[in-house]
Each structure stands twice: as C-alpha cells, then as structure tokens.
Amino acid sequence: MTNKPYTLQTRVIKDASPIDPHTGAVNVPLHYSSTYHQFDFDQYGKYDYSRSGNPTREALEEAIARLEGGVKGFAFSSGMAAISTAFLLLSQGDHVLISEDVYGGTYRMITQVLNRFGIQHTFVDTTDLEKVACAIRPNTKVIYLETPSNPTLNITDIQGVVKLAKANGCLTFLDNTFMTPALQRPIELGVDLVLHSATKFLAGHSDVVAGLAVAGNDGLAEQIAFFQNAFGAILGVQDAWLVLRGLKTLHVRMKESSCSAQKVASFLQEQEGVSAVYYPGLSSHPGAAVHKAQSDSPGAVLSFELKNRDDARQFLKHIKIPVFAVSLGAVESILSYPAKMSHAAMPEEERNKRGITDGLLRFSVGLENADDLIQDIRSSLSAIDRKEKVR
Image 1 (spheres, one colour):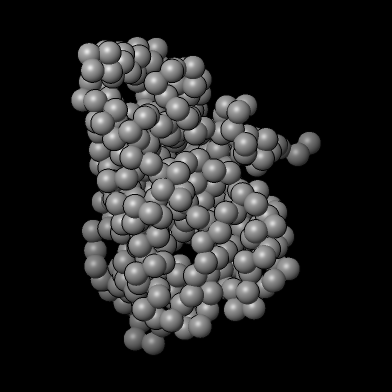
Image 2 (cartoon, rainbow, N blue to C red):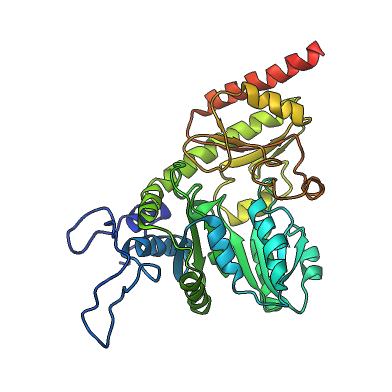
C-alpha cells in the first residue's frame, strides 16, 4: 500500500520546521555567521560566505521551493529585491510584456530603471489572451503577471499565457504575493518563476521585510542563483527565521482571512455608497470562473470604490478596526489608499486608465471577527452618508 502524499496543510508545518539533525531542535537554528572555516586547502565546504549561502536562509529557500513545487528557492532582502534580481535575466534590446495593473514598485522598476538599460516594455491587459498574443514581439523574453492583480484584482488565465509564452520562446514570471502557495501554485500551471513579497502573507505579522523567488527548472535556478550571489540583496538570518515562523500558520491564516474577505466583499457589494467591489469570490467578477479553476480560494484581499477622494478620506477617518497603512497580508486588517501608497509611483493618468481612482481603497482582511469588521465598515459608510445629507 502506497502512502498518500501529505496535504499542503501538513507540509506547511513540516517544511517550515525541519528537525535539526545535530540537536533535534524543532526550530531552525539561527546561524549568525558571515564566514565559515574551511578544513581543506583545496576543497572548500558547502558554505564559505553568507552572501553565497547560509544554513538558516537555506532552510527558508528549501521550504518555499517545496511549497511552490519548484526546483529551488531564493530569499531576498525585500519583494522588490527579488523582482529586480529576476529582471537581471534581461539584456539590452530585450522586451518584457507586463500586466497593465501591477504593483507600483514593479511599475517603477520597469519604467524608470529597466528602460535606462535599453530594455523595452509593453503593458497589456493580460485578462485578454488575444491582446497578449498580439503584443508579443520577436524580442520578447519575459511575460510578467500578477493574478489577482494589485489593486483591482483582475484575473489572468495562467495556463493560457503560459501556452502563448512557450510557443514564442518566452519565460513567464508571476507575482504570487496575494495568493501564496496555500491558495495558488503557478509552477504547477507551467510558470517558470514565482515571486513573492514575503513581507505580506508568508511572514504574516508585519514584523519583517523579505522577498522570495522559486524557479521551476534547473536552468533558470542556476541563473537566479548566480544573480542572487552577484547582486547580493540576500535576506538576513533573523528575517529568514521570522518568515519560517510565519509559514507555520500560513494555511490557517489564509483560510480564516479568505473566509472573512468573502463576507466583507459580499456586504460591500450591497451598499449604496460603494460603486464597485473587486474580489474574485463574487459571481459578478468577470474573472471568477478562471480564478476558481486555477486557485483554491478567492484570497484575503479585496478593493472597493467610493465616490471620490473626500469620501475615502471620511471613511478612513471613521474606521476603527483596520490599520491605515502601506502593505497587506498581516494578522491585522490593513486598509490602503493605492493612489497615494502602493501606486504613488504611477502617474495619475496611468492610474486612472487602470481603474485606480481617487476613491479606491484596498482592504487586506486579517484575523479579526468578520462581523466586527462589517459593523465597523457599516458605521464608517453611514458617516459618509450623514455628511452628504448635511450638505
């Protein structure tokens, strides 16, 4: 009788807590060492200098590789360090095709850094495979995706884009920050490289800044390993340990927060003062069916649109439970204002094209009681309504 493979719920614990073979410790040891003694003049050991490799960081890299189903993982000092290192695979004259609505930091990297090195780019609506196909050029080397996208939660057919990429000799990169491997595993769908801001759901406690990458094949893993060592934006051991600790509760956190997000999104959809709700768990979402086919849950992030900036300001003035802050994916709910936070690097004209209006708020649902959150939202919307009546 063959033993069944462990479910992800079990693996997330096992992979984040490998037993130390020397002591039996159930937590990964912190190896605070920048360098390592070599016992042989001619043949060096596995570790020589911590930029090139550290046992604590390696434990995290191995854990995320197993959870994503890739061949090798890499830990970086931030999500943008991971993304920037991945883009080092491109050379002058190459072209990258990128989802229209991506994180503002990625937009900034593409438009203000890569262009300085002669790397071309095209933003495209990746929810439309025909548009993706038409935008591919002979020199296109990478198709870069976010699904769900940040902050309007648009959904891209991952396998559809992968098929187009492979037919044209392109690599596919996918930012999986919103979903994590607990809810979506892009490498299983053919993606070449998965990227994370591990600051968010993977660590989960607003106490660390980190980035992760997972390569889907050995050739790509070898290239990323070279650039990680050459560029040097590696994750420190204390931060690596904190992300490992966060991984242990990833499955239960994502399950609980996603359940609450569904309730919050459904409530918001019924409110007169809310002009739009962006969440793939709603049947009204145009990408709901595609997302359901390629993911295990709609996730814990949604966005909703109020009438204008003043309404958004009033809403945030009255809301009590969520923190108003940059970032997402924590045990506490976080409300963000993309126009001035995550997408401040994007010009207003470009934001408006992507539906990132002055009334848009992004809501990362935490572990508070969903009914408490809904009551808090109801009260804050009522405050806007009262203000309108006074006018």
